Length: 85
Image (cartoon, rainbow, N blue to C red; front, side):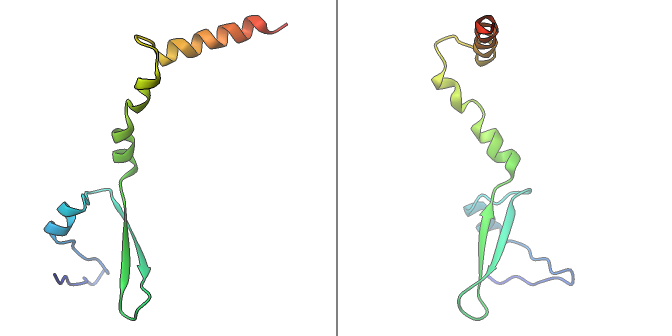
């Protein structure tokens, strides 16, 4: 596929490529000069908000059944406060 560079050095990513690589608004593309003349390497960096959203809830499996991370932290702080002289 061939795209054209605009006067502002912008290019459009063909829809098939964008879909195949999950390139969405907010994704960042890192451009590097390739090892051969007239070649470029592009690395896709996903939108940080998209990454954070995908991580939401991942640590829940490490909590005790029915436990709350906030309640556990509060209890830990109470024990630490009592242990201080």
